[in-house]
Length: 467
Image (cartoon, rainbow, N blue to C red; front, side):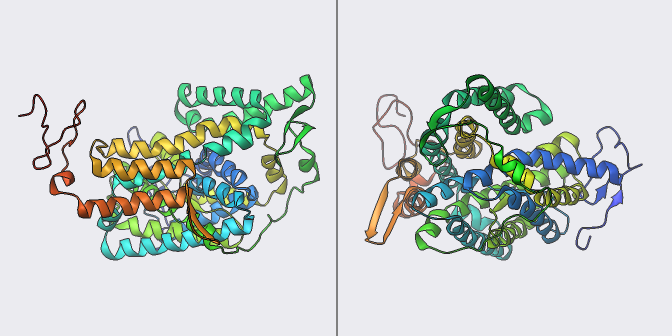
């Protein structure tokens, strides 16, 4: 297939036969392909423009670089892996921690650029040694714990920054977003976050008209009288123009905070490739390393010019599953639309005007969902948390990560939060596994409910009812 930019027309190019699948190297007519591309943009839109706002980065540049990243990914995988690369939510907590330490946007993008380099090298290693090294270094118990502490570490951001700006708008936005996620079906459920944002916009505008200005903290943390929805920047913005670029700066403290996200990104990319392979019937395990490296390279390019990092988007897997159209031509069309959006500063100004209360309602759900993805990894892989080998490092790491526990190494260097929590989980698991007795490494449950006694030799209950 070469670079994956040649497609055969599927059937008559209009309507696939019932039950038929449009494969990655096929396409429908170009108008229909463009329509599918637009649908992919809408599907990724909610998370991909909320993420840079939460990270304090330019949403226009984020959308533009998501298009560039998607092109890089499609070329690297030679059109075998249909995927859209959008801004990764995994870095939102990292950005919040770095900014709380006095870091700037350049500090954030510099730290994340290093993560992109590491991710690229991980992909190279996977291509060389196979996907087995992922499972050996990052088993599900570790991956789930890291994803969980990354998500739950964000809770203070919502509680102290967004929610207090307008608690009633936040509450209403949370309720409507939750209803949309649960009650809507198909495509609409996949853009529930976007619908919640639109609702929050409308409620904020209505409350401004009905109640006037609100007396609360603003985005800068100062208590003032201000409008919930301020469109003054929208009127000043041009319709056409380049987004704002900036170079990265590098600080060790920020880099150490960001590095743990590599684990989450490897898990996301691996899961994405496996899911697409199952849906298309084309085993893609040989593309896992390439996909990881492509994601890393795209993130390096994006952060080098001031944009956010990127990752494969599960929202777009949902679109493919619903339409049964896996054509990479649709993703090329989506990338084109994203580039056009990035050239409209007025669009970025509208996004930047999202009221803090709206973000409060959205992030209550969104951050919790990120954290609970870690629990989903445990459930899917049947991780047994009754096993002390799993329970001890996970329990310690999550409390450190969520609680913001820090370890002062010297006057100028400390580990804390996400970074320290990840080190405790990852290193703790492997060290304990090396030292643990053989029976703790077995797969069956090792600690049954309702007993605290344990036979170290056999792994069986030592209390009443033991056999």
